[in-house]
Image 1 (cartoon, rainbow, N blue to C red):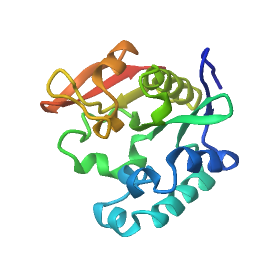
Image 2: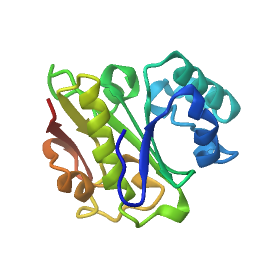
Image 3: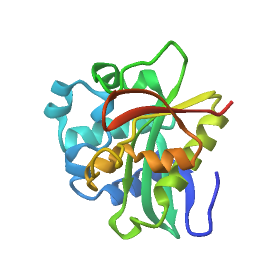
Image 4: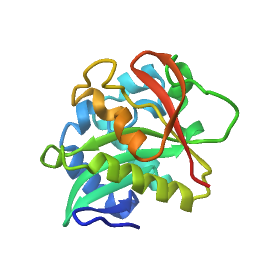
Length: 190
């Protein structure tokens, strides 16, 4: 895929599953395993933990690629989840993230940056890697739902959506804002 001076980026494919597990650790980011946007609330709560891990493993095995892993050397360092918007049904149940129009978009819904790599610019690098991946797969518009630290501070836990300055620096612009602290941002990529 692509590489920067410090990180390289690879699609999450079945042969990289163990790297994903190593990055997320034994609890899988609070039992989520990046399934929050792919399930209903009831499904998510029933699967929190090992069932969500297994569900994400099925997503990876079934394909297409659900996101990009970042590596620092051979160590998994970060993750960005992206797919066509319709693969994330929870988006349309959210007031802040519901569909803006009928434009077919790919959505960036989640980041996870390993603690040792936070503050190193990895979120912006993952945004660029997501753009490359989505473009290679035929996407024309990339959409995201970041938190806006200009409205209120964004904790590490809440930064999983990304932050507005990182997306703005990558060329995204705001297309809707239904809640003060979380706009919908887009970038034409194809």
